[in-house]
Length: 219
Image (cartoon, rainbow, N blue to C red; front, side):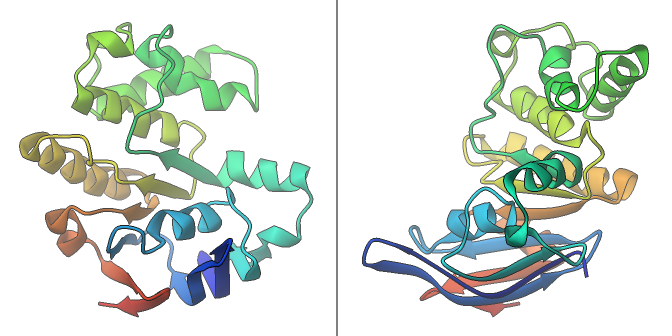
């Protein structure tokens, strides 16, 4: 079991958002988290992804109780095992596509030929071999999200957490992007946990987790 969450609770003030979430996710799965607006989908994703601590409960990644760790070892796990993609690509506007992809790797090591080669190979895999020196303003929304996925994979993470990755894209581009997600899983055996309103994406996932009234209903 790659990810396991037990009895997760989270409140914001008097609003009790997550009310005892229990889930498990296997390596290599593509799992969609769906639910009404404000149901706590992003909150759950952030807790699973080490970005937000629960009020109660435990999260295990590779059997490591992540919220029992101090900040430094937790940040090591975050950088080594986890990649993130958000609705807004969050690329640095002054950097080229390949420079943006390299950024997470530079937290761990110095720039070298091997890293540059890997970044190029990732951009080529997502269909941007001829756009590596373009800045975000010179790329379409779909291309920027492809860069964001390449960036998420530069450290060879076991898990990519994606929060509405197709939310700002037209239907054709969104379809192409989630087809890419399945190709990335096949190529890199990466686990994807995706918050989405995209029905087609969720229906093609291995599993769908519905958040209803702060609890999980699974398809």
